[in-house]
Length: 636
Image (tube, rainbow, N blue to C red; front, side, top):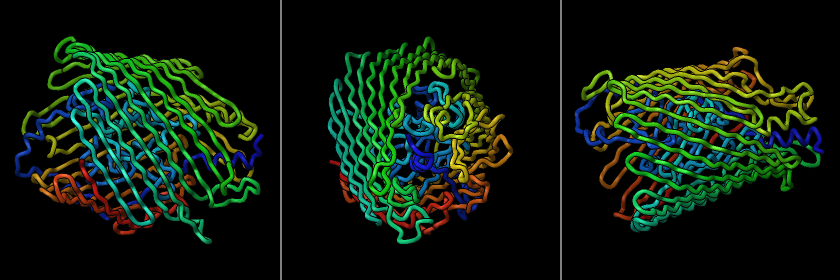
């Protein structure tokens, strides 16, 4: 049996710390003033019909959606050059990201004020949440961008097809196969002992094609925790990630595909407990391994698109204090699902789906598992000058019974002109079953004697927005409001050493406004910017911790014949910590440069945190200092 102090060690080591943000002197007027129509012809860009997967799990034209979706493509990922997904998500409207130190340290991604464990994250269709975590969520700090092709973010409780809760859905796609042969190699080095090597190869024929990408990242890091002030040490990080995909076409209508993903990360951090004396020490290590794969068979013709798939994801986590094992856990998720789409006539689409999943946890004391069976359907129809989509989902959960969620969305073009005006709106619900870890811990002798018998969380939210203009010259304003009923949170009493997962009665609320826009001034110059006002309130009428009331980001890009450059600024302000104390406002300015030496060779240069701002995002945790990187990319 674990002692109470050892359980405290377990939770302090295993739980991501809640995180924050702060303000940059990029004036709001400077962000939005440029969105005035400029001369220039970008009709080719405006007419391009972009499709997204994240809204309904099937390709859907972006201009037929009533829900809020933001998209980051490969070109932007390469130009800005950030190594991990969290930095890109922090640039999206309605999204804030905070972390406990530098690369590899625990990161929290909050969409419209909701925690990451209320957000579903999928990679090539695989749910990559970590069931071995206290609250089931992906380890976002270990996700690298090097092998990714695209990132889509669906904001709010609208993740009907995925069974997602209040945060929404983040869907990532890796670099996919193509006919012929193509390959590339990338290398980058920087301060603090940073190095990154990456390779990608893809090829094949019309019948069989595949792709493989591998990235190895390492850094000595910097001292992650401010309280580690006596003989402070560097807290390094290592990550090796591999993605692979293969597609076999069988005739004109049938195809079989498979993909795998392997993440192996090792992170050094501060603030764990000595396994013998239970004294606080700063020689801590967190090892994380995730193996995930998926196989799918697809039939597609002009009328029907049907996919049957099986996926499995396994995670292993191990924590060490001064080199001695402190805690380990294993998690597993497997799912079989079917999605079918029928297009009986132009302007009509029926989508049906079912998924049966099992989640498992082995925490060193007992093994837990849970099954969930879901059925969902969605009907989309063109209405007037837009589209209406209505859907519902039924879930039968082993532990928490049967639940029905739904979503209605509408998109209508009000003005048909060179700068069209579009009205968008949606309303939807969701639910989250307490994680096996939460349930197990509350039953243990180390939790509060009166720890809650947890109930499921329920969420509901709506949004209403207007979109003005076309791609390249566009401005969007979205008003949102959402509630989470029976919110679950972790609490530790430093006096009694008791802890547990408690549950508010009533509802927490998050409401706000999102502004987003882009302006392509010329073929070379592009400006994109967003800002979000987000007011959050707990069931006890307090501001929810580490939810900045104001966040924003702006990027200026220049792309010439042989030289491309970008400058990105971001800010967050008016946030509080877990005790309600005000956090400093934060700001960050980054720059990147790509020089094409030849058709095959490109040289890269980046600087992160140009102003060397050291204001803490999270209480007692340091942020990354100004850092310079140099690299190259070579296409074979």
